[in-house]
Amino acid sequence: LAHANEHLRRMTDRYILVQDRNLPLDMQVIDTWQGGIERSVRNLSGGEMFMVSLALALGLSGMASQNVRVDSLFLDEGFGTLDSEALETALLTLSGLEQEGKLIGVISHVPALKERIPVRITVEKGPNGRSKILLPDYS
Image 1 (cartoon, helix red, strand yellow):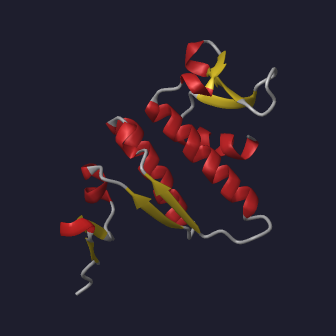
Image 2 (image 1 turned 90 degrees about the vertical axis):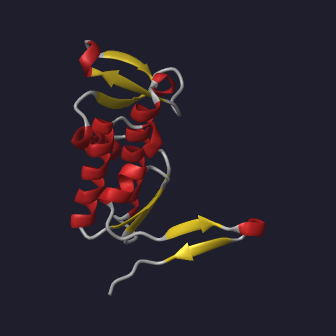
Image 3 (image 1 turned 120 degrees about the horizontal axis):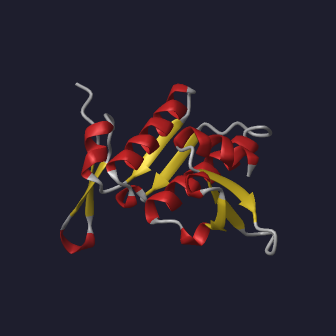
């Protein structure tokens, strides 16, 4: 949780993850914008849950990197639940990881991501259940 909170703090000053006192394998969030009230992560909105999940994934990645070098992170969806401000925060976080030398892969259908991610591999649905992969043109 400490590693995840470091990443979460970079995205928002609103939440702090803590261990649930009654269910040690569950988590709670302290909502600093609501007077420090503690509540279940299950009560977070889709966008809030995405940021917490991203922070947890980055925290685990950081812990694993202490023993094994982890240079890649792939995210599958979740961006569709974000409002424009949360999307910007998530993209800035991912951009910061890229600056640290990490390879970030994003699987998404969100149009705003197409504009922000310069290198894309596109999968187009084709007939008879077959799809076509379109690679970037570097010429």
